[in-house]
Image (cartoon, rainbow, N blue to C red; front, side, top):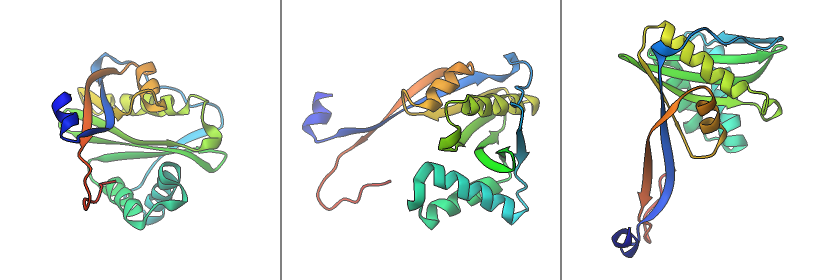
Length: 180
């Protein structure tokens, strides 16, 4: 640590990777009354767009660049991805995604509308994806999170456990352009 500090290297982010052993899980979580979960049709441009626009607005606000939104569109269309839209009374209130890699699934892009937070919906979407990946025959699932935020708390509540912590270090200097 001392050598890094002397070289001007500082901590940028901390990220924890949490895992779940899928065959040990049972059942499928029930949706609350009035909610439905719609699987995104990758071939339907309107479905993909609704997902991408909602996710970008929750994660990046009104300042989401077209590049970020397009990356969400491409991720949703990827053949390995499984994406859902959570609907209450015909209104999108959440989205979530996962990807399959051999016997491993990676949960990503859980987003709940600010008006619907603190209702257990993010945990529900984590549990739903874990059950879906188990039903596809996968062995493990992962999710990445910054410490102490809702994703980490909800993943722990859903039975996931920390595998490792990753530190992202940077060495800012004049003339360098920071990555996002």
